[in-house]
Image (tube, rainbow, N blue to C red; front, side):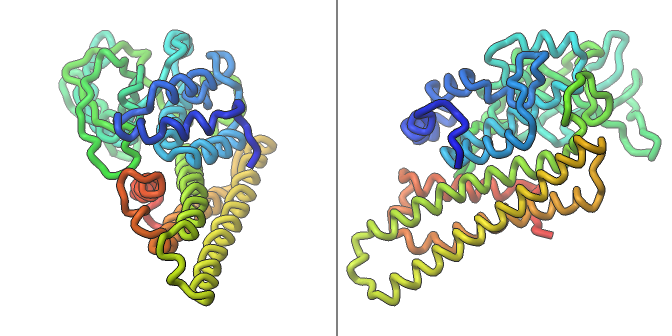
Length: 362
């Protein structure tokens, strides 16, 4: 893969990844690198101080980040992905938010609260889970059911509760420690809540609705944006795992007990997994790139092509998880040792595989 970041960035990540897991959040050295490289602002338009990158480049970068460390890749992907909402924010609010060099968005896609209309804006109450990067976040995004002044739910044209997204500031929310899962530990994907929080009208936004910046790509459908960014995380972690498997097998103390046929069988399994992942990666990027080019040239993406993007994302993520399961038994007890690098990568990949968007292959 091309080295798209500063020299030796992988060495910094590799040096502090294990420490990040012990801390339950990104190590300060890795966090400093993230701020230096503007990773939390990957999707932010240049007008607000973003790097001006587009989704095709961002996907490949996120793959590299996840290959270096799953928690890093996942945190940047989810936090930078939430900052994509910059394109839909009130311009005055966006300029204020992104003036912070260390700005970091965290949030939840779930509808976890309600927002009652008031004379000056909205009164918000709610609880949201799985806010990756919560411990580094300066901004939280939250989806709420809208209510009128009497507390009655407001319905949309289809008779369903009307949902609106809100911008909340770090000092307005309470972070609730609850990320006790066996992988992606350093993402610190804790819950957060607010109680009777009054926010002004301009703290609301709706994605793929009113685009507030003249920048290409903000009308890429959010579902496929989420699926593709999650898929490349699984891909990066799988690339890392496969490299470690090969080294682990030939470093096993019991290797001398295996005969030539057994070693050949391992090499066959390894080659199969490498080829499967590599081939699906090529297909995934080909289909995604077609969808992006169609959006830029035509201003829209055909529904069938979007379905293909979704399918390729899920197939790639599932192949990565299956490859790791096929190869895990060849790694020896080192792979079962929770402090080992290979164990951390395996746990990260399997935790990432539980995301609801990638649950089913078809």
